[in-house]
Length: 54
Image 1 (tube, rainbow, N blue to C red):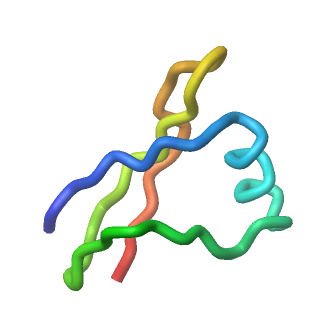
Image 2: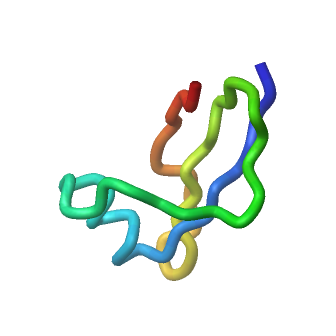
């Protein structure tokens, strides 16, 4: 399984986590299953989650 790092601003990450944001558009995205690390940018600067995209 391929791995990917998705970077989010803290406010966008919180909307995804709470369920207020259900879709995230990315310009390029592979056509195979991906394990994606959810990185939250400054001031947090940490990986906050892992999602499996199939």
